[in-house]
Length: 183
Image 1 (tube, helix red, strand yellow):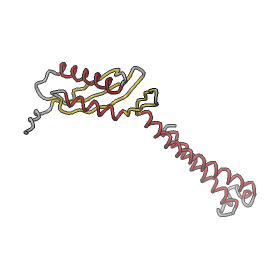
Image 2 (tube, helix red, strand yellow; image 1 turned 180 degrees about the vertical axis):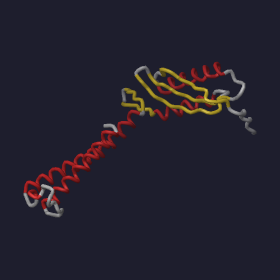
Image 3 (tube, one colour; image 1 turned 90 degrees about the vertical axis):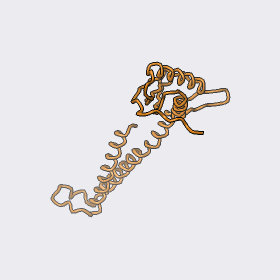
Image 4 (cartoon, one colour; image 1 turned 30 degrees about the vertical axis):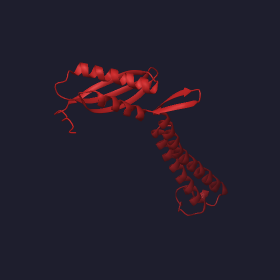
């Protein structure tokens, strides 16, 4: 259930709970309903029964709107991983772990300054989206081709999952080269 449906169900639950409380208030004559046409409901047992039923229905809807949130979060966490099976059981690799593998590979490619990664998957395999900043005076097509090949080979080797595509966007050219580290 998406958030919009849960919100509508929660609002409807609140309205029904309030209507139930109102009907109970009319039954116990807590509200002045003279001149509204509801005078005949005061003190009538059916009004109390209807009030209780409407109130409980509202509470149930309200609780259902909240209970879906936990299930959705749990399903989302399952969806944020790839699943493989071995003879001894299930193997889950989170997409965050794969993102970190991509970052590791990109740091090893000379000429890449910064990397931001996002991972999705479909029926063909993993879809890797990589944004990079490169150092000046690099041949971008060759650099990106090397990065794509290294990422694809490494991820397929480490996870056993096919990589459908590695999309690289050169977001910027770094303003200066990284100075070599002193030993």
